[in-house]
Image (tube, rainbow, N blue to C red):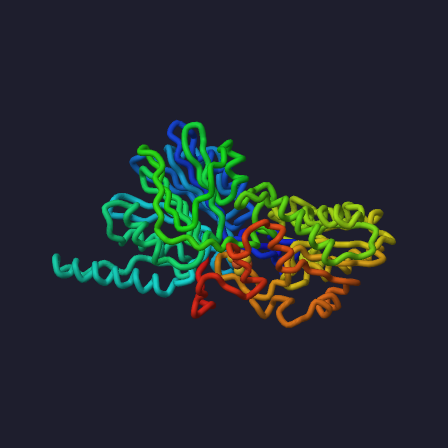
Length: 494
Ligand code: SF4
């Protein structure tokens, strides 16, 4: 399916999108380095977290310049664009957005004035008390307007522009109108009032800041360069720019980095509820979350899956690429050989050519092609990380049968997704989730497979090696660790 900017989406089947992370954030404080280039490569490493828009804000100590545009990092920036972003500190952002809010106005970093200069803000997550925060911003605006009227007798200026589909611009507005001696004080006063998931990377002209909500839902890592510091959504982005991992930004922590060094503040009591879906699908396999490499967790999920749902078969194949580590784990544990059954047309997501109606009807064939000699006459175990609507797996089963597969046994390395996410991941609506209302047998029938097995919730958690009480599993269990919005339809994304 073509997007508004003419690109094809990266999903195997655009009608059956994988859960989408809604942003990647990256920040650098490094005098003497070409910081905008470091951010550029950092964003490249985080491209999987958002492909709708990209932006970088850089400061030379006197002023902040922002450049943001719709598209992939490689499409938004060229060498000369980066040369217009000089300085010693910078923040960057890649954004995914739901249809309808994929506009330039929602691209980040957002920029706003403060009593002490300017703030540029990049956000990964989703705030769940948008209405309350909006009311707070309105109240502050009205108080200021009244003060201005009392002192100058002038008509107050109109309410500041606020984008209705973006909670980041609202946080920017609240930072602009907050009270304190400096941006650190304003942030420390504001952040305890924010509910939901947020990993912020932001800056004024002199200081780089990073903050993570008290549940630490979305990841945020701190790294060290020889001459500075880096913060990034994932450790893989630290590796790419040659930064060594120091530690995660702690839940409820605000970090400020400037010439005075690194200062850490706690703005809320931590109550960790790390997103388990980062391990299943969202994060890069080469990233490390809470000491556990994502690839190892996924391979282990495959092993657990093989123990929980064994089957007699000839070959284990993966739905590329995200199902591969779990398929390898399944093969290792079961003793069934792993092989390549599907080839991904890796670069189709980068084409500007809009498919004709005939091509569109090909669906997933535009992106996946069976390796027929490996499939013909075989009993296959097909491993995938998740099922959302089921359209992809249904088309896949049909394609594999046409290629001569004798039996098709689908194995999924996460439990059935039954509940929506309010903390920054874009799923289908609850009504669209195939596991909402259908039993596993009914789903199997609907997909046309010979058998279907999901990993258990306990098995998935065991593979992450995390304390279950410190994970969010809400989309599988329905147990939300943070109050969800009263009006879920009004939720706002990063
Ligand atoms: S609801 Fe699911 S996707 Fe959302 S934060 Fe929780 S585990 Fe992650």
